[in-house]
Length: 207
Image (cartoon, rainbow, N blue to C red; front, top):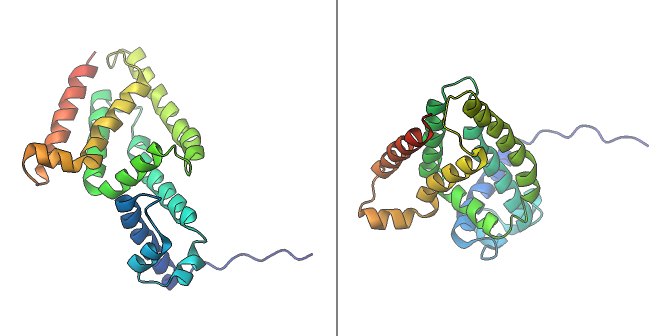
């Protein structure tokens, strides 16, 4: 029995269509949620027919899953860059700044992820309990090492990271509320938030 040969890499047009589908899906999912989104909405947003969309993604669930997988990879990159050899205060501050930058630059992605978690993470539960947990546990050990060496105040590393996630992603998930309370709509709110949070955590974590 012959084995199938290697698959041909996708052409430029195929890559462009796939990208257009994912971009349209991100807009629709982040606006209407999973249940409020239809393949017709995604295909219309991508400028493709529904049969053409189904050529690339066999179902709405498949589009959603791919989006979330890509998002999680992007979301974890700032944590990957936490350097064990660096100064703890600077590393934590830089991590907060990167997370605030993501709240500013990727608000739709943040909302999509938040909705998925609220729904029980049915499409990415295996990633949360697998690669995400592994990375968080790895960086938790880095933080424990810093505290053991007296380089930062004693802290539960997991809850430290949870609190940073909550504080920074608030500026994406609740941006409408933030703008309403501040009474302005300008990018300065993100740099103000970064300055406040880095100062707050630096003072709290100083040994």
